[in-house]
Figure 1 (tube, helix red, strand yellow):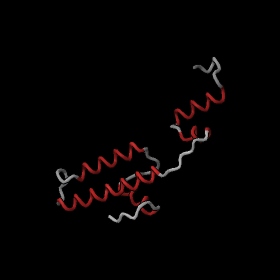
Figure 2: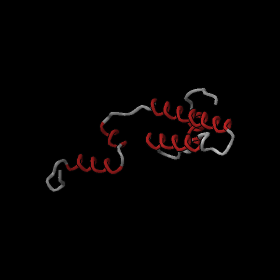
Figure 3: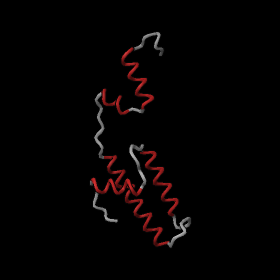
Figure 4: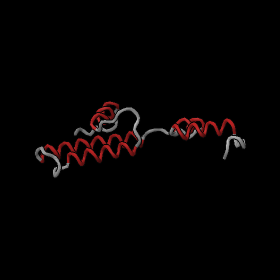
Length: 108
């Protein structure tokens, strides 16, 4: 696999190899990687060992590109942006807490 490094083209190609759609958590990416490696492992794969090894090399390359992409993501630590990046359930609860404070009717 051509390991040119991090670029838009490589991230898109890596996402296609790992079958990543839309937003995915790092845990989901890791699970997809493990699933594909297990599927293409020479002991499990019905194709020739060379084909399996080449596919595992491609999958590993894709995983490394996605990890590098995620490691270089600029996370914002501004209060409003942290709230916006939380999972929906937690985000909604935090926004209500921020709006209503610790009102006894709202709860703890």
